[in-house]
Amino acid sequence: MKKALNLARRGAGYVSPNPMVGAVVVKEGRIISEGWHKFYGGPHGEIVALDKIAGNAKGSTLYVNLEPCCHHGQTPPCVNRIIKEKISRVVVGVKDPNPLVSGKGIEILRRNGITTDVGILEDQCRRLNEIFFKYIITGLPFVTVKFAQTLDGRIATTTGDSRWISSLSSLKLAHKLRSEHDAVLVGCETVIKDDPELTVRLVKGRNPIRVILDSHLRTPLTAKIFRSLEKARTMVFTTSRAPADKMEMLKDHGIEVIAVSDDGEGVVNLKELLRTLGHMKISSILVEGGARVITNFIKEHLADRIVVAVAPKIIGKGIEAIGDLQKRFIDEAIQFREKETRKSGEDIIFDIRTGWNAY
Image (cartoon, rainbow, N blue to C red):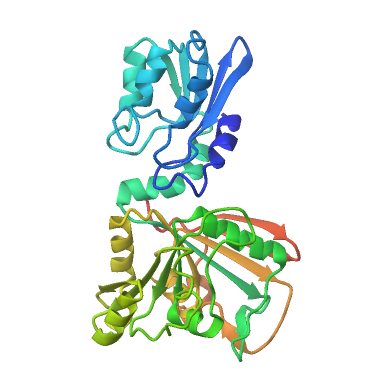
């Protein structure tokens, strides 16, 4: 199963909104084939593995990190092929949460005389596809909030300079996270001050959809993000308060402009933003800033994961990473049970699952 999980990870950033699936076929104590889901619309991991040994899998055991599908989607049901190949046993990491499958694939295999064991490395299998689990159960994208800060909690100096707080290793991590999410989101202040391109350059991977929060459409057309539309789909989320002429101008330049309700304070309603992105089949989003955007996602408990790179630097007065959360006593501080720490160059990475959204 560990091998199946490692194979499945190779599909990260390419199979969304499908889950990552790896498969290993074992016969007489040795691995005779393996495969993984490589791209959305392509064959699932089980099929890739079985295609390599078509007609020679009889009596073998198939290990797969997610329950084999039993419905027609982009591809035929995997259970039909498993039955056809006369597999003797299937070992499943975790049940598929998709209502079209959810135990039905396992039931079909058992009805056809195939021994089927479920729940092997279940927690690891669920974690691998946490994005898929949230999206398929709630219809909302999985939200990762990521930022780099100094030891004293600053994401920029008083002049707004932030290049570069973190190490090259941490910058590569940021680009890896971009490649693994369907979309990357920033506020208009970040675009105006930093002029980012929001593409994947430091690692191999696809460019995410670029999303800008701009309640009053202040982002200039000269921004890099608007001058590189060929590199990635680009959206601007705004409100009804935005100037109609600016909205039309952006649309005329090939930029998607989507108006949603405001939150009562004149800025984009984040819950409606997430619902809209979910309807667009965007299953995951990486929130990169700035401070107000990060604060609002945390304040409204909309983040599923928080990744913070802490650099061994102190700059004193500057722009704080997270603004006022209305916490007046230490025992009101937000705490997390599930967190990992690791080194990244000179930095320390805090990788946290918030547990705020049950799915």
